[in-house]
Image (cartoon, rainbow, N blue to C red; front, side, top):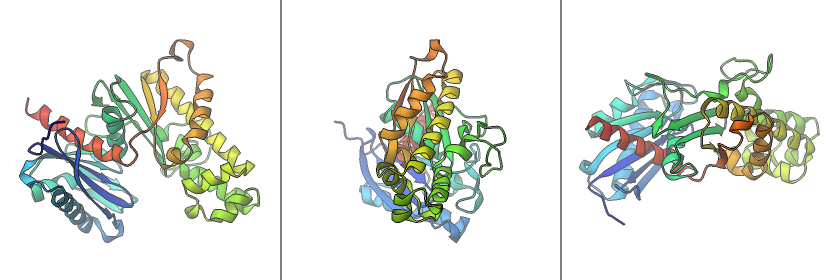
Amino acid sequence: MSDKKNDCWIGFDLGGTKMLAVVYDGDFKQLGKARKKTKGHDGKEAGLKRINSVIKEAIEDSGIDAKNVKGLGIGCPGPLDIEKKTIRIAPNLGWENAAVGKSIEDEFGFPVAVANDVDAGVFGEYMFGAGKGKRCVAGIFPGTGIGGGCVYEGKLIRGANSTCMEIGHIPIMQGGPRDGAGNAGSLEALASRLSIAGAAALAAYRGEAPHLRSDAGTDVSDIRSGALKNSVEKGDEAVIQIVNDACDYLALSVVTMVHLMAPDVIVFGGGLIEAMGNVMLPRIEKAAKKRILGSLKDVYEIKEAKLGDDAGVMGAAALAKQAVEASNK
């Protein structure tokens, strides 16, 4: 195993509740890391300073000289201006027009690549995880919303200056419930962890999910992925049906992705899948097979993400390396 501490890369995951920075050597072996809570309510400027402090701590933890960092990639929530390396808006953080790239570059001097957080996670799975070695890898990540991404022949699919693959906003049900963007009947409105938790909270309130009510109560903010898993395992029929319905909607997103892209692998990730992938993925796969053209039924696989929290930071670091190498050609 080579030791390339003179050729280091940093991956950064800017989540709604946490900031995670990891320093890697040239072989993407971890050298050091740092983590802090996001504290988005402190405001944009304080948040940008906090990002830089996490990066500094990660470099210190790695024991390397900052001059050896060749680049940093950061996965960010919300729509981005890729050219300006700016978060246009991140509602969960309360930030608008946050120049994350410039802030980091001004502080440290190394180049920064900015990507959507789900794009970074899918790229990580393409490079190092469930999609390693494949030609085309798509990702579907159910969470508070539903994020999507796709890597085709080594490149993220993106717009000229924006992210894309917003699979959570594909319309599924005419006149259905509305998602956070106000769109009726979208995949996100029907099958996100938040929508599942909302329906489960109502079932618990009605007395239809006694185990969930006993374990987590009826407040949707307390019904996390683990609570839903326990409810299903303990036999709350109402919650089982809610999860099954969500799987059937997610299967439609698989059908859409296969018919459009014919990816080699569709990776499902996020906390909900980590908790219940063994329950959800077989149903998603079975339901999808019923709707996919015969000529495409065997061209793809559905896999669970392998890297967990490492997907975003590893993918972001790999994107930074790709961007730097492309600029040096």
